[in-house]
Image (cartoon, rainbow, N blue to C red):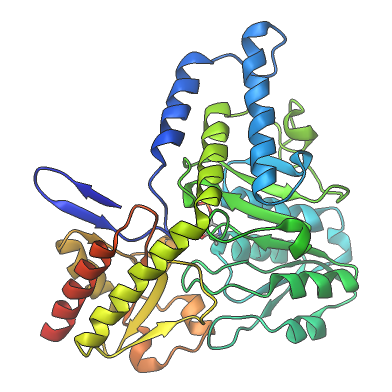
Length: 383
Ligand code: PLP
């Protein structure tokens, strides 16, 4: 996004941390917040439009990922969906010391949920990744134990954008009779998602990553999968996640997702032009860098490592030029330690500290990419 004001122009290129809210989604949210304040569970006619909005939003979201409406359960976002998927799968059988399999490069919402369950007696197996950050399906096959209850591998990584072979991983998990969950927070609204084709049992999503509002998301739960409720209370969300529904945010999320899915191909083309421009500019300026992650990455996602540099310094220098990028994942910002993702990928020693993440979104232009490329090159040439 390029936001101009009278004093300066900010180029926002940290869309993996969060995205600016879509104007139509924002307007819808404000309108609903203002006009329809009633509780959607109430029986009078003031509540009826809200019930309809809830129903339609569920249908719209389901259609975007080829799910059924009753398989979409609204949550407060990716962290909650991930906690729910991991914890509820093992809580009922804790005394059997079940095993959880995940990957070494998951978001903290998965890794720390697994750690919490480990403290309660579970065992946790972390699959390693190759140098592009991909899990090997054969490795999963070998690591599944009789005691394994759930396997959770992210669809796309938040630091390097690598897309995992989810269909194969789900097939292997099911062949062994295990539940398969994927954290698709970075992928939903950016690449085509078909839960039936992937064959996943659960999938986490978060609206603020696809131009929706913050504090709202969903967990896809395959029809027929038995899962413990996350919040007990008044029976909302099919008795699985109680609490008065945030209808304005839910409706805005549905609209944002619908729009992103409708424009996906066009946006992806624009984003790949942005990343190409940036890379070309660095190459023309003879900058020494490597691109992390393989070819099969999220559109607009660039994790770059510069030789003998400090990523944090680069991030701050760009910030002085009103350019927003990240060093690792946003949750790790401010920490100078090498992220668990880059460590697991074994990025070469002389490059790894000089890593920044530039993630373009639908509001960016090719000009933004050129400006970032030129500024970054100047900073690196002066170093
Ligand atoms: N999972 C991934 C892969 C993420 O990138 C994030 C956010 O950074 C989350 C989960 C957490 O999502 P939320 O911010 O909605 O809690």
